[in-house]
Length: 224
Ligand SMILES: [Mg+2]
Image (cartoon, rainbow, N blue to C red; front, side, top):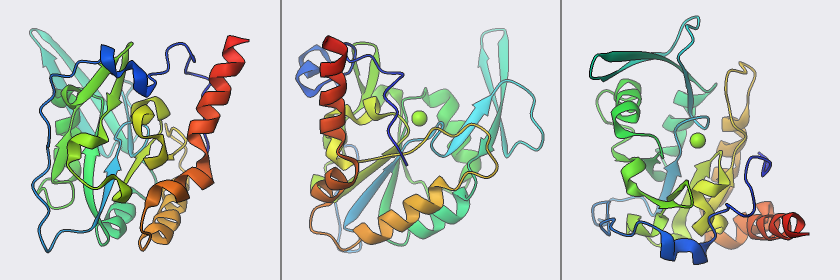
């Protein structure tokens, strides 16, 4: 787990005070109300390059094939699952309410998730690009829309701009493309196990990743 800001320009980083420019027409709560049987903690999972990677290039043994059509145009995408994905999902579902929140278009992402979880047993809650705020060319995931206590919400994402308004809720994960020896999901599982009984995940994630400071320093460096 590490932070890569090289692909983000500080001038483009969607800081919280940029939210005035955001498309704020999003409806408020998107998850059902908490019940007695609900898990107390919510784990928000990004999709592309966090859990899976999709490519138009034909690959050996794809885990999933998605077809997108746009008028007469049909595109086929070959999807590979990050090593350890199914085990990771089985483990986290014991302790977390799990939500997939992707900045990808619903037409694509829904197919990937449906094939990953055809019976909708693991990934019941799904949010797509239209559920993101659009700020300065970025799609920013708005965790406040979940209607959950943010002290108990964790987002796992390979792009920190995606959770720029909730940096203290985030676990940044290295982007995954095709490395069969990748072990990031096992590392994340270990970290999540340590967070299961905490009162508030934010100070702990801040002390581990220090993302607000990293972003601030990066912005200052770019301004020099
Ligand atoms: Mg991603």
